[in-house]
Length: 394
Ligand code: SF4
Image (cartoon, rainbow, N blue to C red; front, side):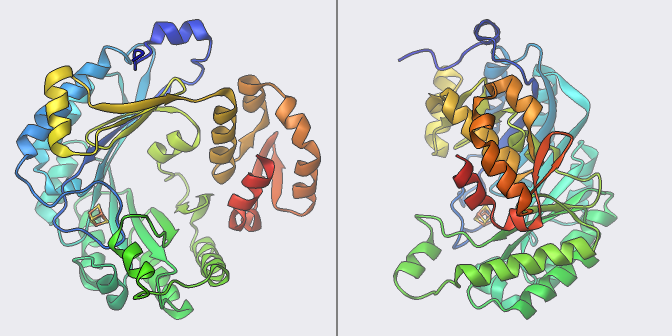
């Protein structure tokens, strides 16, 4: 097998190492139950927590020897699973270990995901004191029936209380996740969810339409005819209601599914969408550095064993071809901040732009796109058809 890891020198030689701002993702797979729609790698046992943290630290040190030079890490993101189930001192050890091994920006955004019903004020304060400065809360809905359907452990009041408690504990940057177009969701239910959300002290909302993932309990329920999904047209109507509501309440849409108060974009997600590099640690984690993508083993025990034996737990990797790079870059850019034609040209030349000039003109004329300082940006109605527009262009 070829060496999985290109080091920075190889990359300098290939002339491709243009974007150096990077992020770090840590996967904490522990949850206290499994939700029916979830396809993230999560497990309902806390047996291996100390061994997992030891393995994480070893993996973090291992990659530092390969990806340290000329990189500034501006974000750390604890995702899961439910990272807030960990003791704060465990996450503190991880943060300090990252800072010891990598060049982390002084003002780095450090996010932790949490779920209502799993955290209280004392724990929020502890997490704040170790340097976490952004909280992402898996609310999903404020409707009791929808929460039951999703098999979440919290109810509406707990969801509201968790957001308020995070704020009272000193967090000023709070995001919530909402899922819309659940089976039997009406416009009235969605509007009520949106009203409650924007009345809370939050800075950011990720609002996704329900996605059916293979291998989930929900998928089986749909296949067995026990649950019926709503159609795409209704989904589009709900999405339009959400966009309108967020706009009215001073939330800017900066990605197809993400909305924030001015100045509160998620810096970590922006790294993904701007095609920057990121290192990810933990079981099932995916990394992307120097046009190479690799992913870790999806099994807690095998991950720990592999790290103990060789310092990494990489299952496989792929090098993106020039065409794949171009396609990902265009797709991610259009779904978020827009396609910067100057940066694109520096990275990929201008033949693709020339080939698509006529289509760009049509999309501009139809107002699916607008242009600002040579950046092509999807309009509101463009966002609603983002996938279709990207497909056409590519
Ligand atoms: S709490 Fe989140 S990560 Fe855990 S099972 Fe539910 S959706 Fe998945």
